[in-house]
Length: 581
Image 1 (cartoon, rainbow, N blue to C red):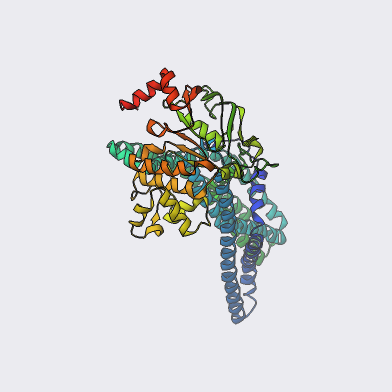
Image 2: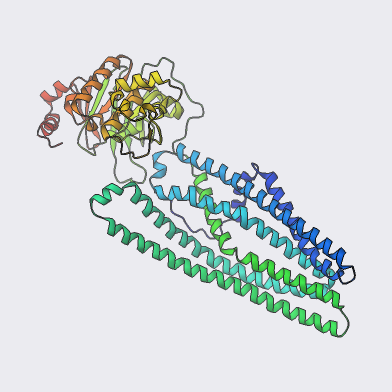
């Protein structure tokens, strides 16, 4: 989901989104508001103190000033503390909800979203919102209070002159609103450039070894430098715009108020305004200028944060395309474990021109082992994705023990099935936790037994810290085959009624594969297994082989029968024997 420019994005909608998180930290928000109010009020009292010092003793004035400055320092610290706490807590809950949204989303959610964009929203946009909440909002709030207070004080001194100041300010604010609309669209474009640079870095890190193997370092640096230069040039343009805003606001306001003060000086000369009133009026006018000047410096940050809030809000509001059934049907325990596809057709989201599966219809009975074979792109892995309900079929239904999985909760479906992908994931945790990811409460003995069954215990014990060895994402201390055996150990530990395996043999040597299949054969009386394989030695003892071709099941039967009657299946077997696949 790319950042988009929507004209007239309702500020009320974005404000409502922020306010929904304010309930977690409203006390600190109120504390920062009260501190800003007290701070502004103290500043507004200083002109009165200065003019009254002309009539009082210097000791009284000094003590009063020290007291006010001490109180000013205290409320400044409290404002900063409260603002920091409430912004940290708000962003914390935003990030929690965002991560929960990502975790609960189906793979189709990420079809149109790059990993760099997701991380950018989670980190960069969240930090930008935190900054605007902790610093900018409270400072702008303080400046607004000081500005309004200065205007009120000026009205109390001389209403006519104060109204002239208000007129000048209204004219400047109207001009700034038009400039804000112009700069707003430019800021959206800048953040699109930043996202592209972020995506380049993210993609490079994920594929660094592959890219280095092609000696692509110079090309990558060229692409990144080009994108970074575009971002830099656009940043300079926006910086120039922000400088113009500051110059325009301060210069115009200074000229306007100077003219008003000249009028006040004229009135003083004709004795219609006292010198004390003129001095106070001038000080409050300068305070008003200072408030607007200070706030205009945050103008760009506010505009950028609005886009960050919108981006985060849009992610939160994305509809879950694979919803969990609210009135879910539960399968009786112990469950038999049958899997049925009923005339299933499927098209991947965003790829409507190509039907991946066409009228797939088969049933695997409890305790049976079925194999899916076919050339690459035939739709074998898509069948496993649909069984796990990562996607919903375009038509037809998928049933577990006679129950449509759309009528079951997602948690129950995935508790009922264990899936071993072709490229298993390693999380940044200990070896024990990696194996026990599907059964967090598993004991060490249970984890070890699963590892033994998966032929993984031997290499695990050879690691420096054994089962306590910390594994990182994309770890290089394990081979591909060892990572695959960890995934198989997870499946054995979880012991679900249905096991789905995608190309287990592709990462295992023949000896370990035969040992694992021996364990699977011992356990398959109480487990239904569906696996994909290009290694026909593992298919020979299966109950049923489903042969896929161009998204349809063209043949099915046992290995021996298909070899005898099927020219296409025999062709696949011959290809493997000749090491073509």
